[in-house]
Length: 271
Image 1: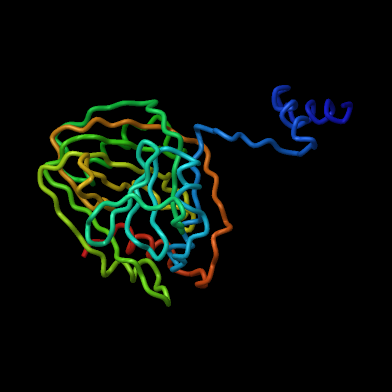
Image 2: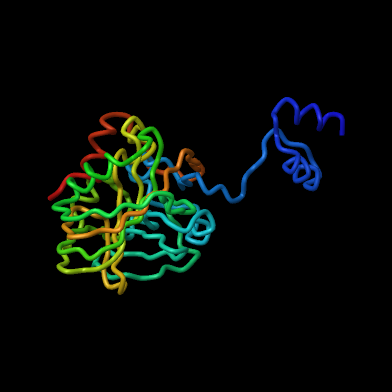
């Protein structure tokens, strides 16, 4: 008990955490917050999937357990993923929306326990670029991540999704050259995703906005390329922490050069 008290004084760990450590039957140097509502949980560094590592280790069930809002992809780069209200949706390369089995693995995904800490209404949104520039102006802190949930009726929505890849896997920028692009008119739904500070390297995440779309009637969705809307209800969750799992298998060597260009070509470049 004396050692525990010394440990608490040194680390300033709350007494409630000490009881958790004692009940676990051992003393550790750290304590884990099972439900940290201000953390982005990421299944792998973005560099892994950027290089072509599309075999996931963690499952849809694991992903859902870490948050209730997020985005990702599935084993073999099999479509775009949306985590919304605790449910995972898979938008396949043909544009159809499915609910994958909980045992399906995911090579990449980012999620959080979403709280609508800030709300804004945006009107007369002419493009994704205009949306991005306007929304960044209302951020109170540009040094942290922001989880984003946007609902509205879109006059136009342009998205993409990829077919499942065959081995040997190609880098993401090459795989997305064969992506399927879809344009929907007068569709109502939700944008889900994250804003990553620009100083975060592309090997970790996608700097700027990375959003996926899911229609309210679950008829369509995908990785957002562009859109127009008259009015949008925007909810923001400023999120100062990120946890990244490095245990995803690395079967394809990680690229070492021109990483930022590959990020741009795979996530920003249009056909």
